[in-house]
Image (tube, rainbow, N blue to C red; front, side, top):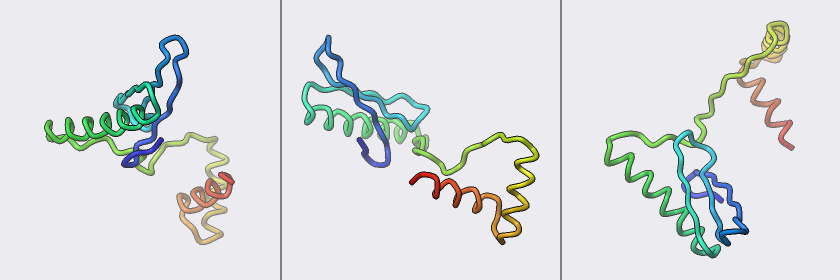
Length: 106
């Protein structure tokens, strides 16, 4: 499920006979639940909106889902090899890696 850029996963609790979900692309915790798909969707939207309102009330920026930055630790020799390859191809290391990651998602 997706709402305002926030992604959620949903599970069904067979014992409680209820759907429950959690936003997965944040460090902050946003959860929701519902008895029907319609209730679940509404609860998801309401929970995200409450989170955004809460951040606003506190004068804080809400955590953004995925900033586009992440740290990867690799072997120094591999780092050197791909940095040289990127340079030879006239690209920054970031651009070269982004291109390779985009190719691999297919």
